[in-house]
Length: 95
Image (cartoon, rainbow, N blue to C red; front, top):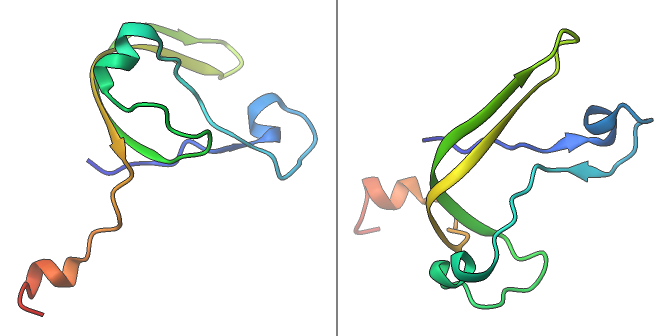
């Protein structure tokens, strides 16, 4: 499964004038769920990789073309961001 960037500009996010600000959707994990992931206390700004199984809990489509979806996270794994895959090392494992 290929990961896709969800970055949006300020204009895309709320129709405001263009700026260099970036916006991303977010999820909030707390308490027992956070403990279950076992990530400790990472610093703000730390990039991590999350793999999850989700369930669609609601969908909204408006006449102006705007759409949204709400997801329930059923299972997840969270860990350090993996370095880019070295495809040559896979094809030629002995260097």
